[in-house]
Image 1 (cartoon, rainbow, N blue to C red):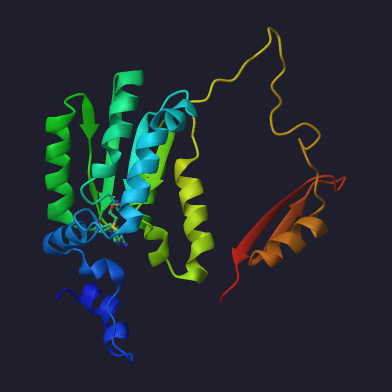
Image 2: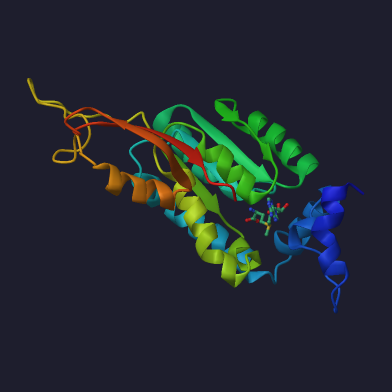
Length: 238
Ligand SMILES: C[S@@+](CC[C@H](N)C(=O)[O-])C[C@H]1O[C@@H](n2cnc3c(N)ncnc32)[C@H](O)[C@@H]1O
């Protein structure tokens, strides 16, 4: 077992009762078992309800977006719930990048190959790793983003981590650079925000702030009218 893996699962194995993190149960076999327990089990209400909602509202879901450049699924598994959405977006936009994010390497890679066969126009780029790493990856991508998290997987996020988890999702899907800015002819663009340009500090004010940041004055030099200060500062020893 790798050291980082040991340190991740060891606390749980040393607790009473013993436990392993939920993601640890997902390898190829774990994912296949999950599918059998959910998709193939007529009594698994959640799967059926979610599928029928997605089926019924596909058009309304995609009507909410002008365009979708990146479509990511957290904990994608076999992505079977995504087929209708992918089909509808491809019909509307002609192309789409799909990022299935999942810890279950073999399974997500195999699913990606099946998706390519089903949707030759789909650009499938699986990301193998944890949810949080997947979101860092999504964040780094340009364009409008749609991120789905299905299968009631929110239930596996500890309550205390829900807010930061949602904040990470929000941060990952925020659309970056790529924005269109309208400019009137001759419109002035300020350097720095208006009214906040060219702020003057006297040395005492500046020194107070610098001290809070862990910098102390070594030496200063001023002009003969004492209007300008050149300062040499050093980092405080911790
Ligand atoms: C509850 S299943 C949902 C599968 C599918 N999206 C669905 O709705 O039926 C959770 C999926 O998330 C993956 N998974 C679980 N924990 C994860 C984690 N921390 N990071 C990345 N993937 C994870 C599992 O491998 C599994 O495929």
